[in-house]
Image (cartoon, rainbow, N blue to C red; front, top):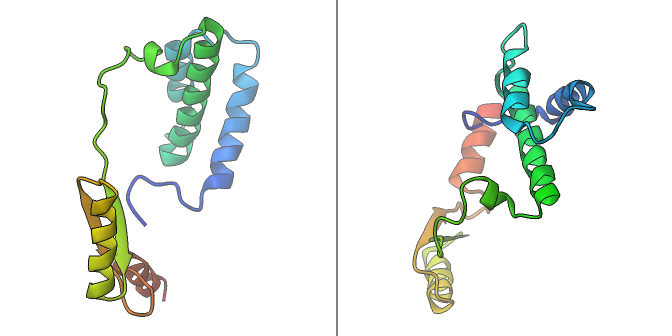
Length: 137
């Protein structure tokens, strides 16, 4: 499991969002920064990733509410458009080198400028999934 993730803690995050809901009902959603500070600093114990994930979800929802109230996209609330293009890459994998080469060729033909390949065991497991399986064994 990667650092900083809340995998397998979804119910805890849901509980934290419900906890904060009671605190947020009736509050002004336009005060995003003040509400964030109050949620983050009002805990007796550090909440770690679970509370941070809940606060993050609420923060995104508050930005959405404010954007709708002001009839502007959220990116405008966050400083406006910064670029016209965002570079991206495709990811592919295959159990054999010839299959991988063919998949990469197809992605190049589709116009992808950058491609990440993920080695795959013949049984269909990637390196990541096999190392995860070994750790849980």
